[in-house]
Image 1 (cartoon, rainbow, N blue to C red):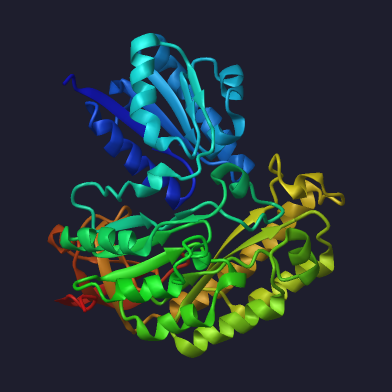
Image 2 (cartoon, rainbow, N blue to C red):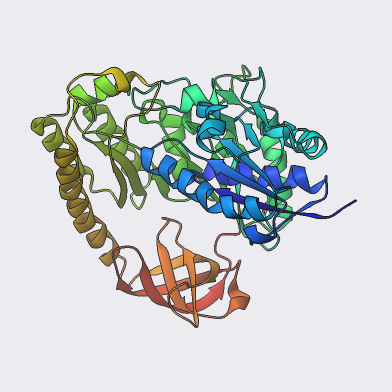
Length: 447
C-alpha cells in the first residue's frame, strides 16, 4: 500500500479534536500517515467550527495559507469538515475555489470512500446529509501514542435550540451511545494506560434520553467509576436545566470523578435567559451551584457568559455581574454575542452595538480576573495532586499538569514523571496557573 501523508488542522471544541483523531484512524487504513508539516502532505483536512464568527474568519485565513501548497502540488487534496462545512456546503467552492472536498458532521465515517473517489476521478465532492444514526459515534477514541488522557464521545447533537446556538442545525438531533459500549471503550483505554477520561457531548447531562433503557448520565458516571484502575473522570459540556440531583450526588460518592464542573450560565438576567431559550432562571442556577458545593465543598466551577445578546440592557448586564459576584467562578469563558446564520437570535430586534458589547466584555473579564486570582491564591500553601502532562511551555526544566480541580500547575521535575500523579505544594499563584514544588511521587488517583 502506497504511503501518503495526512495533515489535519482542527478548530473549535474538544469534540472536534476527537473527530480529528477518528479521521486519522480511518484514513490510516488507506495508507495515510499523519504529519505535523502541511508542506509534506498529500491530503490536508481542516476540521472546522462555526460557533463564533471569529473562528470562521480564522478558518478562511488558514485555508488561504494552503493555496500556495496547492499551486506547488496540484494533486494535493484539500478537504473541509466539521460544523462550518455542514453549514456552508458547496458555498465553500465559491469562496475557496481550490477546496476539493466538503463533508459534514454526519459523514466522517465515509471519509476513506470520499478521498478514494477524489484520488481516482479528481472531481470535487460535497456530502453534508444527515443520517438516522451518526456512524462516527461508533468509532472508539484513538489517542496518540504516549497520551495520558483521552476524549470519549458519549453522544452527539442537541435538542435544546438555544436562540444563539447553531449546534442543533449542524450536529443534528441528540443521539446517545449505548452505556455498555462506552464502558467497554473506557475499560480498553484504561488498560492502555490512559489516566484521564473526558466524556464529551453537546449536553452530557441529557445523556440517555434517546437510549430508552432507563439509564441516565448519573448511571454512566457510576458505572465508569467502578472500572478497576481508572484515574480521573471529567465531562463537558453541562446544561444547567438538566443537572439532576443524582448527578450532583456523584461528586460526593464517585471517587474518580474530578472536583470540577463546567456549567455555562450565559447570563444572570432572567429576561435575557428567556430570550436565549435556556430553560432556567438565575435563581435555579444558583440553587444548583449551592447543591454542588454542599455535596462537594472543594468543587471548582467554571462557566460561559455571552454579553451583548439582542435586547440586553444595562440592568440585565448588572444582573450578570451580580451573579458573578455571588457565585465567584473559578474561571470563566466570556464572549461578545456573535450572530450565527439560521439561529432564532439572528432575527431578533434590539441588537446591541459593538462598542457597548466590547465595554461590557472588558468590565466582565476584569471582574472575573479578580475572582480567579483570589481563588488561585487560596491554593498557596496547600498540596495538590497533579497529573503530569508534559514539559512546561514557559520554563525549561519544569513540568506541567493539572489538579483535579482543573488548575494548571508548573513545577521542577523530570520527563519520566509524565503520566504520574504527584503531590505538589503550591508556592505561587498567577491568573492562569500555579507554581510549586513536588513533595513526593505517588499515584493518588488510582483507586
